[in-house]
Image (cartoon, rainbow, N blue to C red):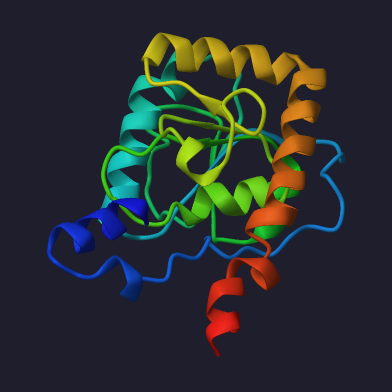
Amino acid sequence: SIKEKKYLIKNNIQKKKLIFTSTPTEISKTILKNKKKYDLIFVGSKWIQNKISLKWIIKNIISKIDNLSFLVLGVKANFRSYVKNISNKDYNKKYFKKSKLGIALIKEGTGRKVKIFEMLSYGLPVITNLNLEQYGLKNNKHYVLEKRKFKIIKTIKELIVNKRRRNNLSLNAHRWSRKNTYYKFAFKKINYLL
C-alpha cells in the first residue's frame, strides 16, 4: 500500500529499490445490470480488522436504515441479533452481480484495499471512507467518499433509488479498473524487470 511504501522510505529503504504495483484484479467482461437481490454488500476476511469495520457498519449505518438487504461476504459473524435482513455467505464474486452497492468503511488496517478494487473491477459502485485519489480514482466519478455517519446513510439511501447515478459510477469504475488494476497491467513494472 502507499502507507507501507512511505513507512519503508521513512525507515531508510531506498525508493529506487521499491516497486509499486497496482492491486491486481480480475475484470468482469460486462457491467453488472442484472436484477439485484441485495442493496448493500460488505466484503472481508476473517481478519480482526474486517470484523471491527463490520461491527461499526452494522451498529452505525445498517441499523439506521429500514428495509435494507445487507450481504456480508467472507466475514464469519453472527450479527442477526442487531438487525434483520443480514445475510452471511462464503466469499464468492458471483454475489457482486447480485448487489446494488458495495460498502468499504475501513476502521482499522493499512493494506492494499483489495476488497475495494475488486468491487470496482466488477463495476460495483463503492461507498468508502478512504480517499482513493492517490490511486487515480475520483470521488463521485469512480466511487463515493463519505466519512460522517449521517452523510453515509444519506448517500446509501440516495444511491439505492438513483439507478442512473449508480450506473454512471459503475461504468466509470469498470473503465478505470480495466486500465489500472486488470492483472495484465497491474504487474507491468515487474514484467518489465523480468
